[in-house]
Amino acid sequence: MTSPVTTWHRLAGTAVLLDGFHALKHAVRFGAEVPVAVAVDREATLALADELAADVRDRLSGLLMEVPEETYRALVPRPHPTAVAALAVRPSRAAHLELLAARPRPTPVVLLDHPRNLGNAGAVIRLAAGFGATGVVTTGTLDPWHPTVVRGGAGLHFATAVERVTPEELPPGPLFALDPEGDDIRDMKLPDDAVLAFGSERTGLSPEVRERADHLLSLPMRPQVSSYNLATSVGMTLYHWSAFRGS
Image (tube, rainbow, N blue to C red; front, top):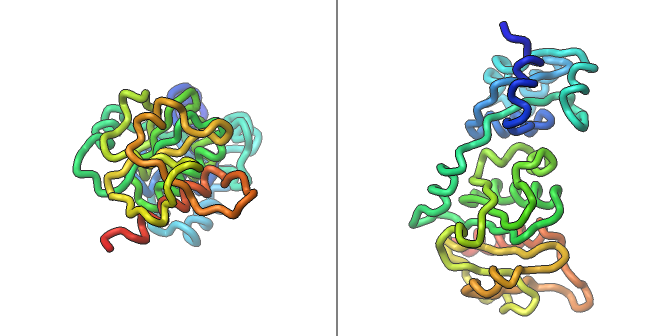
């Protein structure tokens, strides 16, 4: 049998790092291909699965290999409290772009326009997966599959289509962009095939996305409060979409 450490080093340059039990649990639950998974205490990890993820417990049992703590720490840049890590095959970009472009689309796509904060991007992906969004796309230089983003998303990248795109590759559909100068979102019903665009945490929407927007919308906010956190804004918008869906 090939050593898990050997397999890890062979795949580490191209695979997705699943950092911690919850990231591995979600990835497996949503169909990720996981060639290698390690834990410092295999039995304790499976006991955690019995408690929190019984639906994937047997699959985790077949994947997890126990390794010494020093070996685990040498494999990951930042050890997770659960002392579990795995590598997964990144989903096909072509398949994701095809899914994002398919019409009719049953749920919105979230567009993060030139995001900067890795943790915020991960939190948005976790939210989008929870609401059943078709996908999360980003423009700019941030890699939405960076290990810090995957950690922030708790492995839920595998529950929705996550890709970095150019402005020319934006999914079709009416583009609703969140902007302080936009119309009150409470007066608008968001269609299921919407593209919901959110600007950078610092600079807002890029001129390219703002110009392409079909509608500018604003979130209700108390005077003298400057802004919401990016993930909060996305969560409020997706909740507004879901609350009026089918009404």
